[in-house]
Image (cartoon, rainbow, N blue to C red):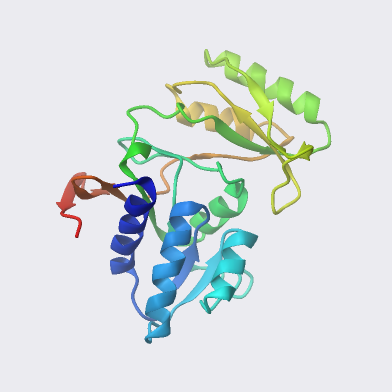
Length: 241
């Protein structure tokens, strides 16, 4: 099976956790877009939900497919968020932000009672850091912020190139109008310490380390669906159709 088929399978499996009356966070990225499409099918036949999208792209897709939307100002507490991830480790800490929506994704995740991560099984790693860590930063003081990140990383024994994400001829801009630095640190042995160091840098708006936020991961592979429950610490496997 190709990656898109696996992503769609994970999205369909996540839909089992969505019940009528729920207030949903709706994630961003290619896997989350599969979820929006299957969610829209259920809404069309009577599923009663309302959602908060984590990016302008997700919002546009939801509106195109007639998925009812709200905002965190109108609905500040959510029942569940379903989102993708760039990496998932065995204790279900995540790297997110490959699509550039990490700030809004983290705000929505923090406002949700539960978080389900959907992905293909290639996103499961033994240690976070193979995927470059996205760090959303303010444009003002970019050079100083980059140096501060490098200094903080070196205190933890981390090194590697930190590059400004580009889009065509100019810098990539997030939905909030910020820039993204992608940090190729490699394997990160102390994710919580790194998160704390990054949080302390004034120019850092947010980073892509999602620590202790996910409750369940639904991973699709060629042998079926694997569900990892953070609290129960067990896995469930089901066959793909």
